[in-house]
Image (cartoon, rainbow, N blue to C red; front, side, top):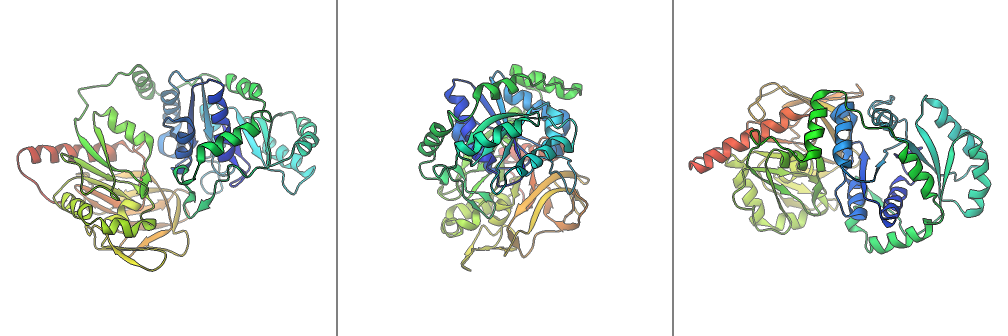
Length: 467
């Protein structure tokens, strides 16, 4: 795990350089992100050319993340897990579901990224605090960020006196600058010349990082032990490529994917594929209608507020989505997808644009962060995908708001810091700001697929109905 002392210390830049360097060494590499992040895995994919994943204790539990780690690793040489926030930061003022908890659960040796700007010997006190705050800390190495060679050589012997290896440093650089906006970093595809910039960055760090020490730490990681037999059997089946065809449902699931809708867990896609589904990607920005023959629809999160004009101008797609959902096609619409189903969306300039019009609300960009963090959703009204009782672990992170955010669920902060009503639940529609991770929320996922199966049969029989 490459973790940090806090947000903004340069973890993602360091991880991109390390992933690229390991690839240059001829190793097959698997990348993961700790927690419910969408953007960092996009950077990992851009660097490696292969899909990454998320390891999230809140969603999947300890055996669940160990299963995902084993599945993702497969026969690869090394896995790199990028941490989130500060190393000991978890739910509320606890370590629950944080990086330290994940490192302990998955047996990950940790390299801590430290930016010593504005400090001299005090950086040693800070590092010592991280090493001693919890035992075992799992921190095996330190990577100094944004320092010159002279400053690195000055600091290194003092840090090593603390009993931890220094794996090198990342020099001050301007080649690979990852800018931020209201939902985090800009995506990798939006950075002009990302790969040439990455190559220049790597050429600067290829001689400043001790790759042998890094590989040595990774080699010391213990085997991935999955204690729950249910997860152990699943991991073995996945690694061997086996799939229970009796349980497989042959369904075509339409999935929005473009610049406006880009927040989708890779594990959710793999879950659908293991159930025999065919993901069918489409662009609400550019395509003139939904793909033919769909049995279900997923409108994931993203940045519709940045593309509201283009989404509105595509009247054919808006009509196609409206007719499909109103006609009973099962649909999951999360956050950005939820906003797309509204009557209108107001962008940052105050311009108002028509959306799909499935739901009566009006979306807008709020003045600040509206919700952030892990939540537990409890269905209080009606039925969702045919289920009357349902509790779901979810995550919210949005700067947009809606005049009618829904009230069918009670959302409780996992930290216990508050609760509110949210979301729209119907037999064939989930719509709301919360993002749902299928692994660990199988009842939700299976309910959606069951309704998609019923819809498929009704369409084949020439019968349709609304949501």
